[in-house]
Length: 146
Image 1 (cartoon, rainbow, N blue to C red):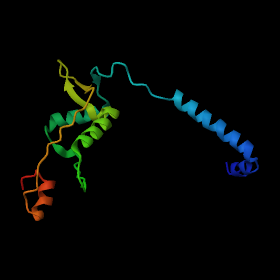
Image 2 (cartoon, one colour):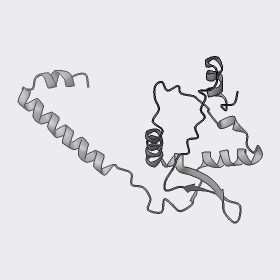
Image 3 (tube, rainbow, N blue to C red):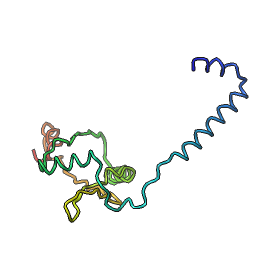
Image 4 (cartoon, rainbow, N blue to C red):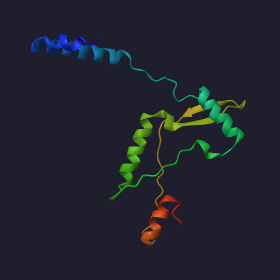
């Protein structure tokens, strides 16, 4: 492998261009054949993976325990255009079905994944403009009523 740069540098620029073009075409063809197609019955309930089953079990054992939740906050400076934010969140969820997946129990109590076809985010707005500046930051991190 260490001899490859030496071999490449020995090629004329025309031969190097042909080689790189062939490699690019080969990679494009390989990428097209390696694409994972979604299942046609994606909207039908699916069995849980082992990891999902473990989380389901823990939620049944300790209902509502937030131990696996990872909260975070992002400060956005400037004017926020809520419709654009909603569209962006919906686009991310449309691309990643794990964000649209919920768990339900079948009639016999077995858990299944249910993938929603669309995600419509609800973005509640809390106006903190009436609060003094010193309390505004704390209120933004909490539920807005502090």
